[in-house]
Each structure stands twice: as C-alpha cells, then as structure tokens.
Length: 130
Length: 119
Image (cartoon, rainbow over all chains, first blue to last red; front, side, top):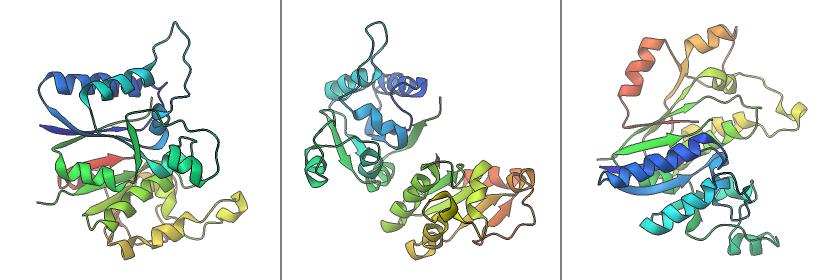
C-alpha cells in the first residue's frame, strides 16, 4: 500500500515522534511512502538549527536520518516554511536573509505536492496536535 | 481515477494562521482541478460569519479568500450545525452558502471522500 505522511506539529510534539515511528513501521511492513509532507508547524522539523539537550531525543535529527536512509521524498511547504523562518539557499537569497537552515534531504515546494502525493497514494496519515 | 479530499477546517479565523493555511490547501486543490469540499467544524464555523471586522485585529480579511473558493472550483461547502448551535450561531447569517449537516450526515459525508484532511 502507498502512503502519504503529513506532519503538522513541530519536532518537539509527541505526534511528530509518532509520525516517525509510524513511518518506520510502514516501511518495515513492506509498504511504500510516496511522500512525507511537512505543513504548518511541521515545517520546523526541517530546520537544521534545532539544538536538543543531550539527554533528550532529537526527533528532527532522527527524521532527517530516516529520510536519508530510505531516500524518501520529503517536501516542506514553502509558504509555511518561509513564515516560520525555514529557508533554503534560493529563498534566503530572494529575501535577503543571512541564514540558510533547510536541512539536507528536504525540499521546499508548494501545497500542490501534497495533492500530487494523494493522487498517487492509497492512504494519507496525518500527525498533528500534541 | 481522481481521488477526492474532504478538508475539515477547525480553526477560528483570528486564532493564528491555521485557518488561512487550511484554506490554502483547498485553493491548491482547486488550482489543480482536483475535487475537494470543505466542512467547517468546531471553531472553524466562525470563519463563515458575515460582517467580520478583521482590521480591528490588524488582520487580513480571510473571508475575501473564502469568497474566492468558487473561482477555484471549490463550490461545495458544509458546516456542522451542532457546532453553530453550541456557539449560539444557529440563526446567524453566514457570509457563504454552506449546507448545514447534523452529526449523522457528517458521518455519511466523510465516507464519500477518498481522503480527509483535518486542519
């Protein structure tokens, strides 16, 4: 079965950790993840500027490693990312910002990528709230 | 076959960017000619109220974007009647035409779509 995973809360929310564990289980069970889409506060997971205390789980780092390991299509909504300060090289240049903080493995794109993923998939599983 | 989306919009219009971001999901579907309907639920029903004054909150008028929905091909709007009643708005004029659904009708509605996106 083909899944789209929708991450809506920041990396400190338990739901974003559950999204990661669910996604790992999806692949472990032999299913496919068409796309992971980060929207609303979920875009903050794609920042490489997060610093987590040593005795706490770094869920954003775990997401990034999981995406890299399985070469997942990880799309971050560009409008939601810009208004929350997550920029890639092109957007930082366009808006004259010094910091580029979109982590490697993610790409900024539009909401059309969510809908495009849905058209390819069988299931959408969204993780938001707490 | 094209898959359909029911967007459930639950955020109040002036409680942050959530309601506007939900609306953007609908407009994006419309831009790609994909079938999407919106159900306003919980505090999301407040988005439909007529004669709001967002400028007093130094906010942009979200209802202008809502009015644009038909131009994007999003014509079917629903609102949870129970959520209007709970907020004392059962008889309040709405800025947009939306079918009022009771809980049983909402259950039926959800079954009609391939996906449900709740924001």
